[in-house]
Image (cartoon, rainbow, N blue to C red; front, side):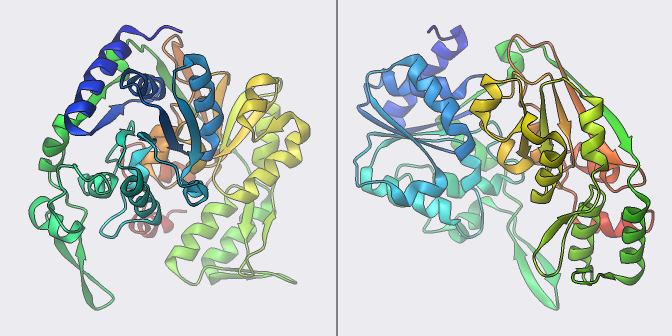
Length: 409
């Protein structure tokens, strides 16, 4: 295989940064080839044993990239949840894909802690990868790099001491208590990371894709609207065996969101498909098309498979090698995979996260593709339009949004 010219340049620059500083952060936008570029840096550094940590659904495509490159090092790709299964091996290069997923604060996540222990044992060179390194706050950077002993914030004992210099801490009253908020990370965090970072955009890579979004409305069954109206009025719907409860604002927001796509999770923990209207509409509208379907709640997959039967898969390899469409949960499918073989993307539902919106809708993009068609399937009189209005402006849809919108639903 042949690297693109910009990838060759990034490999040379990245190799120098790793040699000089011990790690590099490649903040390359989706579809610009950051996986292959990172593998190329490992080859340039003459690594012998390389570990690539990613999301489970991305493993097969990453292994394909490795086989395509055929570098002179042994290689293992695993998902973050399997770190504890690794044998005691001294890796001389560890690549952390979707590194922003380690960015929880003020306390480190289990994932960040496990990666830190792994780095402590091997003391390897490190490559971090993400198209969106700090999607919500610059504060997310600290725990992405804190396990690397030579990171620019290593002199700080923990996030709290780091925040003394790099975070504008605010106080918010919650439930009668004053809670410290650490989301105000300062731009100086990225300035400090600049010598370790190589950024590259789709525009710089020559992408000319135009993404067209279309909104399609589906009328749900009268019984579904009746359930929603009862829940809004009484905050509870009592069935023969199950109960739908919306006795808190959080529960009510979640239940209404579920119901407008035809499913619900009962108070018992059981889930049920109540209305196949969306799934049937998608099957009819996109008949004989190979599409990527994004859903939010697990029960929605059941609705999709009930209608699509054997003509839909959840496996990326099967999707790439057959005429089947693919159904993916938004959060697990928004990163690290390519749906370039899809004719279009269809959203069964919409996530509250702005990150989910921007990342997932870019799954079809390639350098040679000029147009992406994205279809949003919203319930008539539903909540999805209001969620879209927030996330498309790079704002998460929050409880405050819901409380404001509830009166107009």
